[in-house]
Length: 139
Image (cartoon, rainbow, N blue to C red; front, side, top):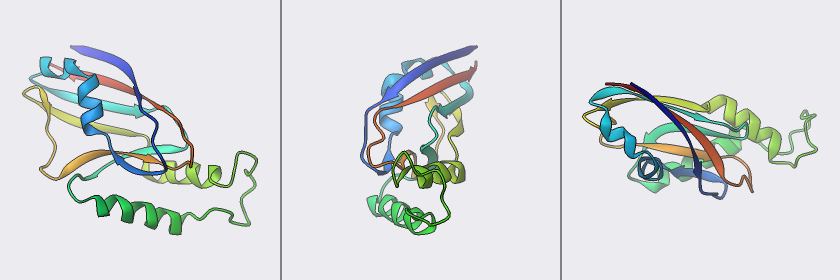
């Protein structure tokens, strides 16, 4: 069986945000799958997805600090600057982290590790709401 839907994520400030619960709330169809895969595609070029620590919020703070140091704003070699000083770094961060995840489904639930959660990595100061295409495959 295949199912696909697009959901809207609420707007968030710049940073790394746990969105696992928000996704699961909008995908009740997940319970119909005994075994399968959930594929997530974030339809944006200045935000990303990753899977990481879901318990200690300081991990998400450290992620933001690390990426802001590694991919600074106002670098003198950027030529794509007309959409704001946070735009080109956001594109780079998005490519480094990626915009998709494929996760296992077991007995109607995501089969994640105990301390794993899905992050929306918002790289813009004002990114707005984000769209996520969710494809479920399995039986």
